[in-house]
Length: 79
Image 1 (cartoon, rainbow, N blue to C red):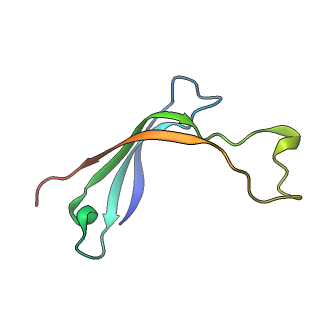
Image 2: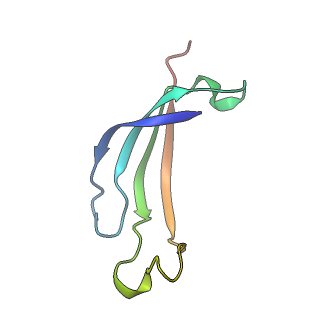
């Protein structure tokens, strides 16, 4: 499944928590559990915002671990 951002809502603590999103499915492959999902919505996010300043220098290290949790909700029109 691939998707596109439909709606963004700032998290209650936007300096630390990534936004709450509504993602619309744009395509599906296969026949698994997510093959009929039309929307995915991560909410109640905690963390996920990359650190700023010297602790995150792309010239030195292109990766940084950032703790993140969220509740994911999946919607389908039933088709």
